[in-house]
Length: 63
Image 1: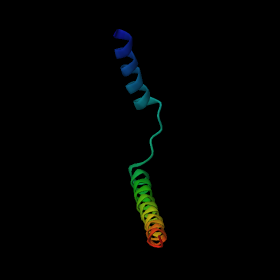
Image 2 (image 1 turned 90 degrees about the vertical axis):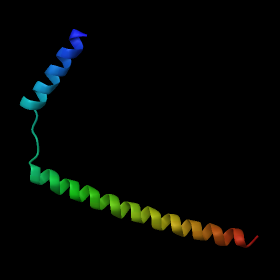
Image 3 (image 1 turned 180 degrees about the vertical axis):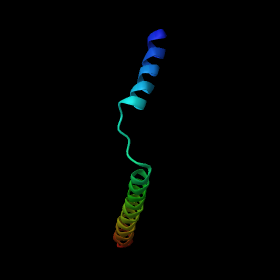
Image 4 (image 1 turned 120 degrees about the horizontal axis):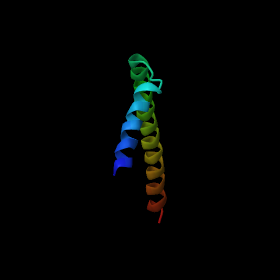
């Protein structure tokens, strides 16, 4: 158990001293880009799903 606690302490120390963090502004810009891409991708998938659903509905109506 002592090794685990030491591992956690060392991990926090490394995060605070050896990591290079991006600025708050850059993090906000990246978040906006990811959110926008996610929305566009979701709309594209929904559109493709609608097209396939309509196509399948029309195909099965033929029988």
